Each structure stands twice: as structure tokens, then as C-alpha cells.
Image (cartoon, rainbow, N blue to C red; front, side, top):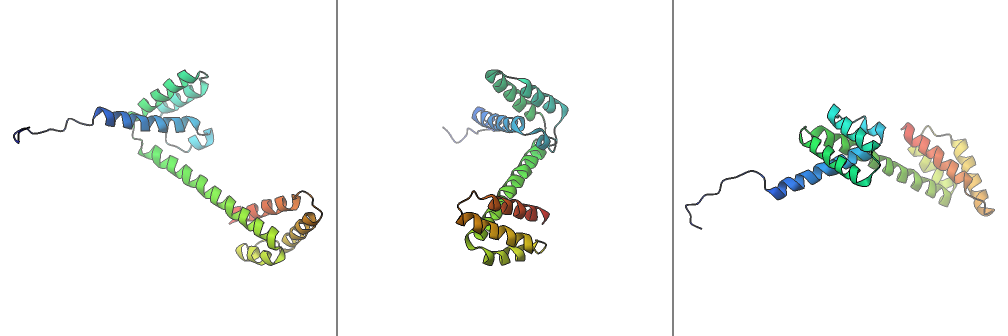
Length: 168
């Protein structure tokens, strides 16, 4: 090539367009799979709502694939930034719920393992907790473990700790 030839930008390559379309189809798939309550929190236009509703009525696997491809095509015609932000917000909410669940589970396991000494930590984390109820559950856990019974009290403790965590 000579130095005199210049290249002009002709727009995105065919491969780039395909990659973008695949990304839009992934978003469309995600929108179709979302529960109705979560989908209601996402800003969708009428055409997109109709495309998703049609996808829910389809039973054939191949027809569903084509409908999702069509939904991705509809996404090309609108601004998808608000949709992506709403999906990210849903993901962060689910991560937060999982994190809370693991935190409550760890606290319950600590109370089961250590007994009454671990209750002080629970009471410091949740000042509104019922001390007497927690002590009763801890004694029941100890009694059940000695008698090799199913951990019903541990489940009750987990439920109570989850309620305390949700009140926070």
C-alpha cells in the first residue's frame, strides 16, 4: 500500500454489529425470563411489552428463540440505557439479599456452636431483639442437639434473626 491511500471509517464492521445484536438478544432473553413483578419496575415501551408477552405465550422452543431475536431487534430501536440500569439495580438487590442471608446464616451458626456467649453479639447487633426469646431458643438448640432431635429451634432462630435483619 502506498502512503497516499487513506482509509475512511465506513461504520461498524459486520462482526461488531453481530456482537451488539447478540448482546441485545441476551438482554431480551433476560427480560423474558424476569418475573412479572420485577419486569414492572423496568421502563418498557408498548412494542417491547407486546413482544415479551408474545414470548410468554409461545410453547415451541424454536419459535421462542425467534421471538427473543425479534425482541432484541425491537431493543435496537429504543434507548436501552434505562433498561440496563434497571436490570443492574435488580441484580444488586439480589446480591444484597444473598449477602444478608449469608450474614444471618453465619450468625445463627455461631449461636448454635457457641451458645449463650454468642447471644451478646446478636443483642449488640440488634438492640431491639427480645433477649428472653433468644435465650429460650438457644436452650432449645442445646437440648435438641443433646437429644439428637431435628434442629427445629435452629430454624426458628434463623427465622427470628431474618426478621430482625429485615427490620433494620
